[in-house]
Length: 220
Ligand code: SAH
Image 1 (tube, helix red, strand yellow):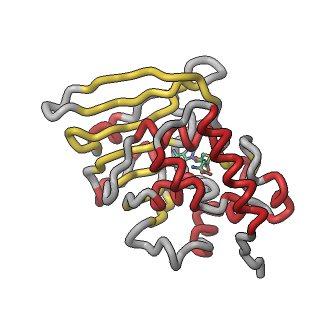
Image 2: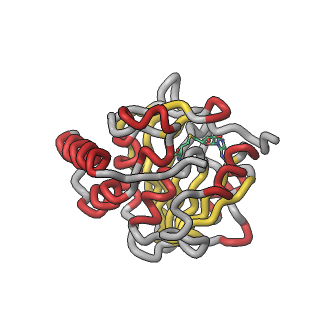
Image 3: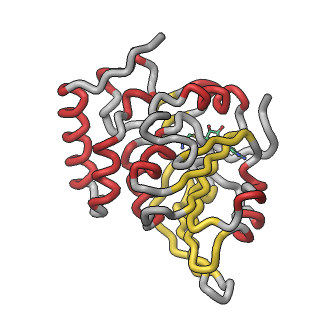
């Protein structure tokens, strides 16, 4: 069994990564603090230990990816997470992004369409620190959201969506925020959608990113 160790070298590399995110324009100290707390190398194959703190995406199982730290920081900053926010994440992947949200004090519900990736969440290595009351994993199709837990304060989509899923808009609380990378051509435009108290939506557009596609249905 893999032994998880967060030693002084990891901590040093992580600090450097946080400084580089700051230089790239991430300003929310709560986001930087949470990312400084979560050992990213735990979420990668142990062979990648030495490069886990480079600001780049890596492949994980099932041809999926763990997002680049800058992307995680950018999306998380847009989400304006507050302690105890109920956050729906679409695309659990490596569990890294979800854990960063939990480290900010959010209550996270994370949905993954790949059964194999979902099964890995059963061995979540930070279960003690972040029990099910803080982060809970589901196998399902993110296009449907999680009807039994709606409404959500925040919704974050970590795969490239072909359109804004209507059911997710419905499951967003009035006053809530959704961050979604929306497919344009080969790139994805990062959008922040705020639902006003009267149900109307405000859309803000940010930079281009690239994500694995958001696909319908469950993959067994
Ligand atoms: N948040 C992840 C990023 C993983 S990549 C992390 O921090 O590692 C995006 C993930 O979205 C992939 O695992 C992919 O399988 C998943 N995905 C794609 N379409 C989906 C859908 N409709 N519902 C749920 N998950 C989906």
